[in-house]
Length: 293
Image (cartoon, rainbow, N blue to C red; front, side, top):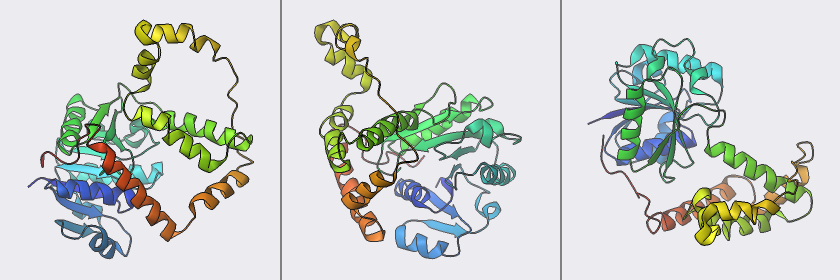
């Protein structure tokens, strides 16, 4: 049985652990939190999972490592230093980081060739995408192995040609979210209607075709070139930017629309996950692991 070491038992780490466990991997989770065993029993019952507060104890013998710790570069450097000393040659050391570059994580690490970012969209067990981001010192065989593992888990791994801050998914998300925030701040639309608008238009469209393919279709027989030269030529308005010092009213709207706290969070998670599961199969996305390795 293949062995994966998951570093960090937060939302992302537990979701990765469930995905690997359901694929038949032996799962080890390392986290210093005192309630680690209780959290694992609550969220990962029925799976083959062992726990340890000591990463140096959880890492030896692993076939793959998925790090899901806090987004602090000093901590990442410490964790990957421990992993470098306690994992075998050829073992991929992947970080779930959504913002830190693999070159920064691997700086000064003697096994930099085995380090990359495997950035999922939340929750990893449901969302197909994993961005595989190599650093300048990452070996090609490391990227190949990571892609192989993620694909066997039923994911859609997309390898980036080079690292860039925010990678690709989060860069797109930031631009979109900034504009959504700006339009709410300007009184053009309220929070609940913005979410409904996106679900009823761009969200639905982009679940079936990407932006470039959408451009091809939008241009009709003339393709995207026709769209750019005609409708696109009139998209000359200033899009504006949100005011970071004036977010309070917008955040109030968000809380009024969706609530806060554990009960509201769990309700929204269920709605999101039920909807995601419902659309994965009709869209042709893999619905689960295809193999254990």
